[in-house]
Length: 143
Ligand code: RTP
Ligand code: MG
Image (tube, rainbow, N blue to C red; front, side):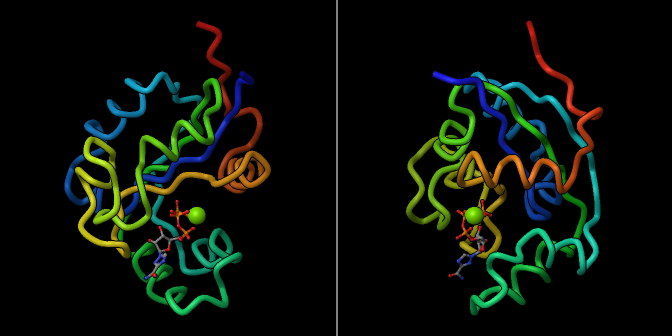
């Protein structure tokens, strides 16, 4: 299987609950490696740009409001099959449907405040990583 990179955002609810370390432990335990990381408090324009694909959806306004409500941890993760592996580690979008032991089952309260974002395809992962990180900020993990 190919080595991929994916974008993770630990959302404002997870940061406010002080669960950054607990969630990164899940990420590392799944074999994914952090190759870039930054804390950022998104502006409205930055959140709207990131979620532009959802701009016509009914939840868009609330999503942007939530994502700008506090700081987030943005990370690029690397590993075999990283896009799907991280989606599996996060669990379903709605924590009520997320399998036990997943990030959203254990740390999220609702579909709106669901602790983590993960890219949904390799192509989107490339674009999303480039939205937050310059190539020089990505540190390949050779060991
Ligand atoms: P994400 O992009 O954050 O990783 O989540 P996802 O792929 O599992 O879900 P997506 O369909 O991309 O939706 C993005 C975020 O919008 C919120 N949402 N709310 N109220 C609703 O019906 C609804 N649907 C989606 C969620 O916070 C979701 O993570
Ligand atoms: Mg998504």
